[in-house]
Length: 313
Image (cartoon, rainbow, N blue to C red; front, top):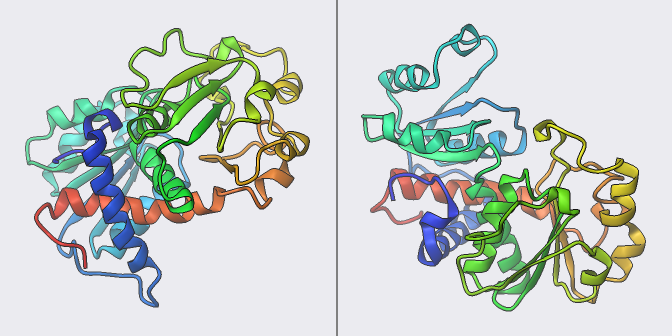
């Protein structure tokens, strides 16, 4: 495994290996001094061409806890703002020396293109590309659910919201399906993709619904997505108020979930739109667990890429 670009490329065995590695690094993070020398001497470059808080900080924390050196790069105040191409920017950074490039970009497919351009053998990690993929988010969500339920096999997950524009949805539906969960995508027709062919490559079934209330009683997990207004070129719902009335997880809807059902959200949340504040902060919510898990998952990814023959400390 040289790069981590998408969930489909990992397959079941790759996902399972990274989840097992995450078990080890979750234990490291629970220590009084959560740091190991596993990647001492390695350099990880964080190149974020889109805004990010959770993913960027999580990757930086993960690299530092593995004792790697980190270099942060953003578009503001750099040659990118002067018109430099992505290729020239990447090759310039590569020439300065790096072992891994963690990249987030607004264009779908950018990490794959970078992996073809780089000549030094450096690893590329996709931290989110356009509407396309967000593999480490899917991994941390799988680990969060596995820790809570023991396994994803047989779970029924409702993925609710702006699925059409969501890279998280694409990666998560694939990962959940590969690990044996059944998925129902719930959204207005205008926020569903034109086709779901290839979205669920595993044994888990995939269904599509426009009726959240009709689905809630049968699910173990409600995975809520933010309305991706910055990626929408037109008004796809009449109003946010109407969207909340039909597809928001209000307190009343959460009360109708069956015993043991949980709520996830990749963040950032629009409280009062896709999720009520009392649900986000309530006993069913695993949202902060997701954030906590992110560091351990990204430690596992960087360790496996940059120390392929090593054993976790």
